[in-house]
Structures are given as C-alpha cells and as structure tokens.
Image (cartoon, rainbow, N blue to C red; front, side):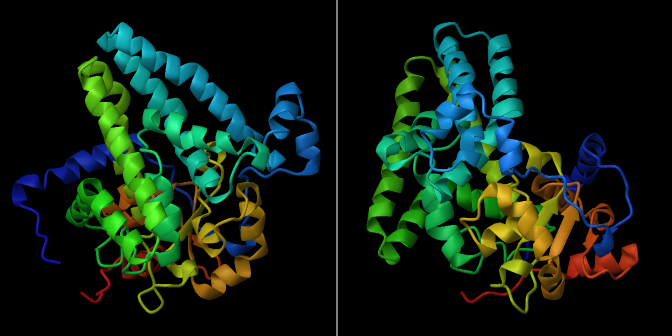
Length: 378
C-alpha cells in the first residue's frame, strides 16, 4: 500500500508495549476442540423464571421478546444516570464533574449502550402498539453515547451486512494490512470525515433513498444540536457530546477492524473466514455476546442469547471452514495486539477447532497469512 512510517514515530512501539502490559491477558495454552466450552450468557425458561420480578413483568409486556428485558433495564439506568448528569454539567460545569461524567459514561454505559443499539437495530425491541418507543434508543439516548441518530442503522444494517466486508462495503478491511497502524489510521480517517457522504452515495446508488434521507437527517440534526449548544455552554457540549462522538467512532472502527482482521483471501465473502469469534470474555458478559461475530454474520437476526449454543452446535462447521476463534480476549484487544504485531499473544488465545495441536509458531504463521492486504478492483 506504500505507507512507510517515519522513523520519528517508531517510538510508538515502546508506548504500545506499555499499553499491552497495562491490559495484558494471562498466558495460556491454546484451547483444543475437545476442551471447548462456553461461559457466556444464555437464558432458558428456568433462568428467566427466577428473574421475573415486578420490573421484569412490566418490561416484558412492552417488548417483543422477554429475553430482551436487560435492554429496557439499561435504557432506564442510562436515562436516570447519564441524562441528568449531562444536564447538570450545562448548568453547573466543573472539570472534576466533567471527568466523573466521562468515567461513568465510558466505563459503565457506553459499550453496553452500543451493543443494545446494535441488537435493537437488527430486532425491534418494542411491540407494534408501542412502536414509537423504538425511537428512544437511537434518538434520545444515542447523542449522549456518541451515536448520531439513524447513522448506525444505515451503516451497519443498510450497508455493512449486505456487503459482508467485500469491496463495496465502506468499512471493508480487505485492502489493508490488518497489522499496520498506518493503514488503520487511513481506514479510520476515511470513515470519520467522509462517512456521511460515502454512505449517502452508497444508499442512493442502491435505490435506498429513504434510508439515505433518514441517515442524513439524523447526522445533520446531531451536528446542528452540537453547534447550537456550543453557544449555551461550550465546555459542557464538548464533554457531553463531542468527546463521546469521537471516542465511539474510533472504537467502532477499531472493533470492526478486529472483527474482520483475519480473512481467507481465497474466499473473502465467506462469513466463516472473513469474521472472527471471541468466546468466554468479560466483553460478552457485558455486551450481549457481541463476540460471536461469525454467528452474527451467518444469521444477523439470531438472538444474542442463542449465540453460544449455536457456536457449540456448529463447531465442526467452523473447523471445516477454517474459522479463527479466540478465547478470553475481545475484538478491541485483538485490534491492539495487531497494531503492536503481538501475534505471539494472539496465538496463546487461539482455539484449535480442528483438534490439531499446532505449535505457537505454526499458529502465528496461520494468523499472519490471514492479515495480508487483499488486492481489490479499483
């Protein structure tokens, strides 16, 4: 691709290693097929029966699927904590309060909100009689968590899934070296600055003009809100809306990079080998089994509680296809390890679905072969 970093920036390796030490995962022996089990959240009639308190019963009457009560609970928590906190900053701004707000938003809510938005974009949350409430997550809560209304749905459901990381996908990772920091910078920059123009053009070309208009209206409404609030309280606006907007867009692209980092160049359209899955992670327990990305691309509407069971039932298929599965790490850790070229750490977390007992060096070679740039037509 011709992106050679200047030598002055090579100190990034030292910094990155410090980051890796701070977020390091414990070494382990690569998991083999005979030892595969999952500890990620699943729900059955028995587990639900023990959780049916008054709030559960109330929420279940509003939504399409009783298993999605955690989304309603998260909506209420975010509304009662983040929204009043944000309003307080506009009337009584103090940097100490601003730092506390950012900590609460980023460490407690933002990851779970994004995956709630993800799931409710694929499967409407509320029953038809309460359909208007489906606007609450993207339109009311979204701006507090860096999401402009309608843009996520249009990009993820309207574009990313139909294109499945192939060249027409605006977030395709194929043409990049997925262990190259400078390629990621280019990838993120294109998304951050041009997503509205690229996405609108894509949707219009594919005769989805209504979705293009909704996306444009949502994005411009958010930007207009931010612009207007700058005249009310610029500091509060920067903390409440601008910082989450930049942070979340960066993290979404880092996550997508990790999800689609290991591609079999001979069949890049095959979801089993252009996506990865991460099992038995804290991230799955917090974020509604988002680590099961292969299963999600195979069937986008599969319910999040069914992901671990579907994976276990289809391990033989995953092994036959040559899928890449990691245990105990998430997509963002995968991205970080790739940026630092820590294939040794990734190899430690590799799951040998086919039962073959490979050496670490053999796993590293396999992983490296799947991160090379894949030429695509201009």
